[in-house]
Image (cartoon, rainbow, N blue to C red; front, side, top):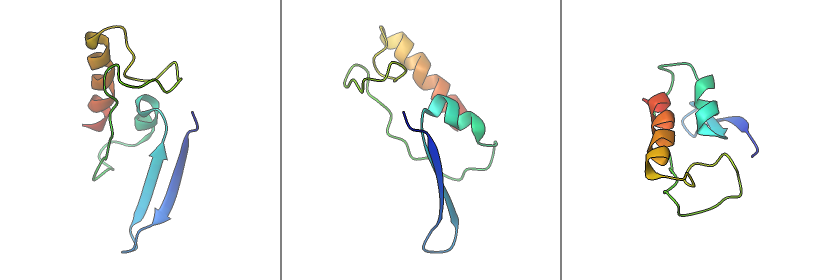
Length: 77
């Protein structure tokens, strides 16, 4: 998976920092209390296979899926 960050100016001049990558690692690189909004599209359990062995959504059990999702959401909160 390609991981990158891209900074650009919004139409009102504010800085936008777009991060693309595995949320479980990318979020750890963002300092606490520096984000005003987080937009996500979480994977559904067992719905799609993106051919990435680390992807969330193809865990063996719903419990393991929930644990993976909690790992991400605890970093967002």
